[in-house]
Length: 163
Image (spheres, rainbow, N blue to C red):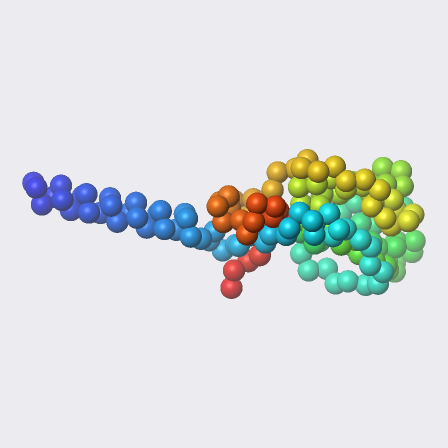
């Protein structure tokens, strides 16, 4: 009976140790990508020209444009004046972007944890509201651990798939 109890204790200790190591040293198949707050606040801008779709997310239509979210990177701007020949005309770089909406001539999008307003005519940021959104969880539901941040002013902007 003592041997059985010792065996059960040893198995339980091994299981707890392996869970502790996995939970504290790994996020599974994804790793967090951080950016300093000062860089984040300068990171939203428009770039003319075609950019390939890699990991598209939500789509928003506002004639004559279609906006396609590139998860964690920004928004593709597609000119859909001729629906038989849509033209990829530009890209709004916005690290941490997962969602966007348009009202009038203003696009609202998330720049990681901040809400940003962009004038669609000038293609410039007109307003930033800090710390509106929570940092995103990994696509597989993993969480990051506060003590793993590169610095106190860093912001989680994306999750990259581990090789």
